[in-house]
Length: 439
Image (cartoon, rainbow, N blue to C red; front, side, top):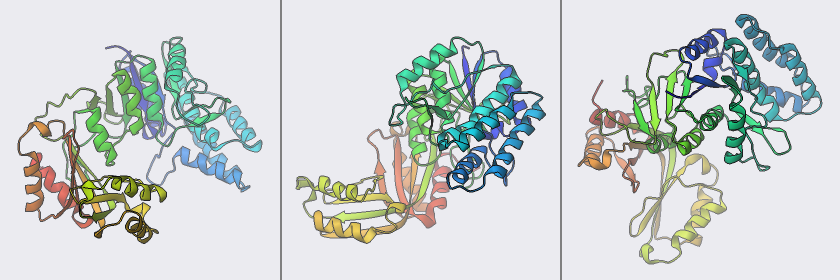
């Protein structure tokens, strides 16, 4: 099969019970040579993630608030795992070093990274693999931007020295040698970087779900699982929030042509979802998935002869730039254009933005629609099937949903509709039932 790189998320490393599942999974195939792990996540609903506790620890120390009790809570959790697993990684010395770093003024990135660091050491000792620290291997420039080529070279050289190894996710190093973390969920990126450097045949991302579902199970009862999905389709769905994978983790694997397999640590027998550069959808479904987000505001602008006015769009977008407002979508007609904006950017300045548009751009009419939700119906085969859009809009009509906005990309891979937020769940169920069928 070739080299497999397996990344295990926070829920998979939460305690000794979960880590034993990891060992069973790793031992089931000699091809799983390299393992990347997150910091321990929640063991139960009221529990805290280790990374959250470490950030809180930094906040306490930074603001001169007593932190010793919080540090002890973190320490005892790791000591409990060390005892449960029957290994000794020198945790007492590790925490002495952490406390010394706090006293001398450490960074938030350093403290936050210790969750992954200690998790990797524990798991490496338990499954009998080498430990490789990603400090000095995953490299950032002085502005905190990931250096892909340098990281690939450094990781590749180090991995070549080990038959099997466990690596911590989430962090790397700045040029001055200090620790730099990714954004939350960044262990997925580390896993993809290791997969690329190891020239893996597959990058396995183990979590607490058996891959992607065609719709949100909180809205659609028992939606079908997605067996295969292309990188492009995943990007479209991830953009609307339907992802169990850090979206930046796609890039290194995609660059190297490595498929990603989303698997469930608690149900290793499930095949999960394969993410690939190729369209491998053999389900027969027209669509691959449905996803959506709430809380948008649509600013509809009407101006006669807009299409022939040179510089109109430049001036309009300049107004939004001045207010530091990103635009999600820009559906337009001959004399109309709609600005689809996440409402959080307009909470305190909607009136001011409208005033600036009228003053700097000019308009015959401006209409504002709030409480709008966007729903994306995604599928690489939609363009190949005649009448897909008609079926979608018929489904919404029959469900009594009024469509306030329509936007379709040039790839014809997705159709985005804007509906009133009160109709959000109804619309998703109607689309699912039309294309997939009632469960």
